[in-house]
Length: 301
Length: 258
Image (tube, rainbow over all chains, first blue to last red; front, top):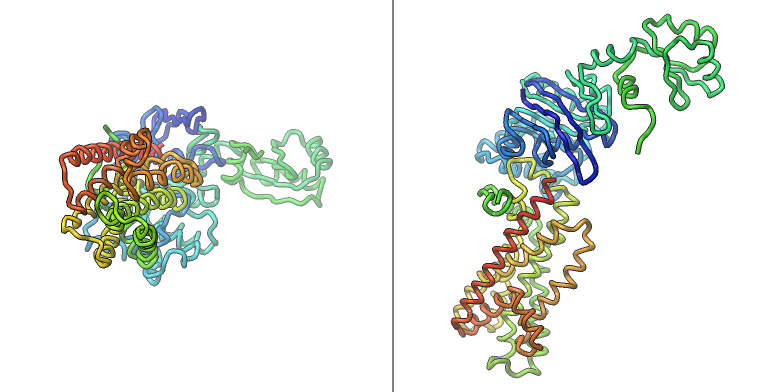
């Protein structure tokens, strides 16, 4: 086990950020923490890289307790934070070298690692560029390179692709899968369910400081939903009409949309025959449906 | 003990190196303005005002005030660096959070920032001392020790500044700190005239601030007037500097690791 959390709690004054959280992370796999904003994902991650202290419960990383061995733990992991914390007064290369120094790498090794990581993230031609002159995508790639200079066994990524264009997102996905193939353990948070589905072997769904469920993407879908979803855009009156005529089909309402769940695509034939002109999409159930089912479709502050 | 000075490893120096690297990258912005204030002080207080004051404590005013100018320039450098500078790195650039995600500890970041502030005070005092030497204001060779004392005085102020920085939510609070403590210290601690001029309660207040001792020792060195009293002052100044540093380092730990 790379990470082992047992009834982990974190309280800030009167606010409970993480409540009786249990989970385990095995070596060489990719784990996703998903949940609405404020669910406790970032707090959980920060406890793993030892900058937030658990209030109670136990948290072990590489078999070491986070309270007693923060330095040893941090030496073996790489962190990609949610917010950009690159050094704007330094160049790309200097940003990497400064971190290599924090990790205590001897200079020749530091140089080699920094060059390798620049190459890996396709940034070699930007070594001398000051950080403010990098694009958003390049900054993100630089933060990824920086998280790799110490050759970590575990990489923690807090929303690694938020705000990036599709090209950079795909590049980052490719690189993360490549890292996983090398046997590096990954733990990431994301709000993009397609990303979670694509990258993660195991997903931990959190809501209101608690773990709601855990499993592989396909497991989670199978556990919570029938395989097909008909998403229909119907006004309130039409919705009431449809629901009145087909009460036996399981469904969920959200704003202007109606979601019907069925075990076969043909389950919805009746609905579509009765309202042939209703705007709709018929598709397999996705992780996003599970997410919304478990954490609610309404927006919470 | 766990998060105070006893927990510090030599790794803290890497944070100092990072600051030095940025300082060198922005050298021209750092050196020239740092010289303007003390030069203005020498001009205004020493040569301007000084022409009306023939002597203070038996020396020409410009020679009396030299130690005060050195001192006030150094503590100002350290204070600005460890208030606005450190707060910017901590809160705006998130630099500290990045550092403590590596094997560097939060206490080490705090100590490195203090040492960095003190270093800036030291560099500054070397510059100002050279200028004073050039202007013929320095008479005694013992003045070479002045930058060392300025380093300690700056260390003291850097520690206090880091303590404040680690406690405040927004930069605007620094205005209270400057108005309520830094400026009074800059002017009341025997920098520009002897504190014996003040009513006794003010004198007492001035002696409580370790800066008064640092200025007095520096002045005594520069004017070659050593006495046993200075030993006590040195002891007090060093002890409070150590104490402030310990408190500031712990406070920074509590700020960064929640």
